[in-house]
Length: 254
Image 1: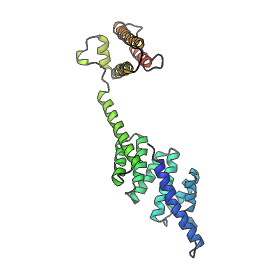
Image 2: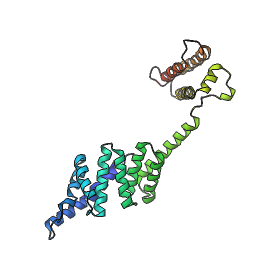
Image 3: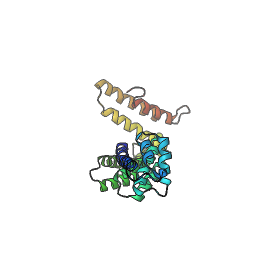
Image 4: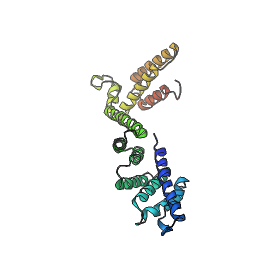
């Protein structure tokens, strides 16, 4: 699940406070002393989702040594959100890192950074960030959903790694030449497992008795032809397996 609503709400709420404070100072007894560190422009760009202006105005605020901690955090969040919209993931992560160095207790930022780790394919870091967000805020619905989804994804990837290079049958009992060839080639082994898995899913799907009979007959014919024709000069085992997988998956047929 995306964490944009959480971060957008955080940016809007926190930077709105800055705008109100700025208006009060601008109309009150104390005039603004240094427009270079005034956060109002960063606020306006962030709320308008003007990414180019957000990067420049919030960047100036972040880089200014006089910027107060609270304003720097809000500017970093605004700029990170802009970077994320521009698909500049590493820079967005760096800005969220900066926020968490200043305030490690930001649950929304942990969740947002976790989503970026997930996009980069770093599931362990994503899980750690989602867990941190939940620890800081047990009621963080988005972080909980993200944590559950990534944990399931990591488990699925682990299961795939466990069977990588293994066919659908036991190689220890393989007797046919084609079976031994499949066992000796990880790519063919993976294809064989995918074909069998697709067949089992198709067989479990709702279909008419005639469709079920057709599915079984075609699978038997595929296996019989594979066993009989393997080793012949014009027989391409890999192509035959890919064609069968494509047929079962419904690109042509079911």
